[in-house]
Image: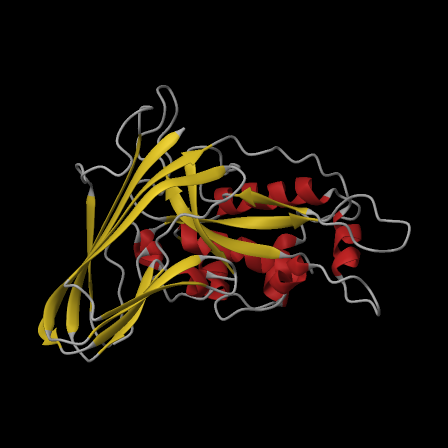
Length: 338
């Protein structure tokens, strides 16, 4: 499947901003099941400084600064991405065994996945997460089966309510509210898994805007999306005690399913703060933020990066004092500190 992604962010400032620095995570990831065929990032006004980088989690990013007065900022990321079905894991290891494999042991082989065991700014390790996860993680239950059950429960027991939270809502607060949007659902799931001693990542990305004929429209389409990723340790352990590399599998509690070729992965981190599509610091101003995302299928042979087509726009107003959600995609809109 080839997907054309257009992600447009527009800020209108009152009064004009004198200087600003921004960081963007808007380049889709290159993965075994995903290939970026073309990408273009347009910034208006033209920044005085622009630099691409790779962050600590392997995500492509762009830093840019504006050093002249401006009353608007428009950032458009346009990508052509080829996706393929993701392998279906068949991991039957008991979750307690998986947890034990990830514990620190003297002279044990270091597993990079262990970096995602620890608390992060939006997702602490907490007993409230453990208490919520316990009905799914019963003694001896296979890890993947338990995680899927947790995903089902979050989908069933949490209400999708965009006005209930904003981009800065911590996962513990969303857990107490039992409501929110995809950012909240993903971070709650990540918090539950980590609090049990299981590595989990936060994934940002997109959904196909229009589903295939006969399939339901997914929640989060026409906005950036988020889901969780669980680490499955290798079921066999080497005779020398060295850990073999395991695999990551993605789970979307918002839509109660495993992501497929209709999903585009943008960036991977510990929580939303690591992978916000666009965030920055400005020299004081109130602003109106408009975000529009469109993901559409592209026929083979179509031009790589096309002119932006019709989009569905969501608008929200943020003040310097407080960012308040006004749109369905608030949890996925760029963080912006004034």
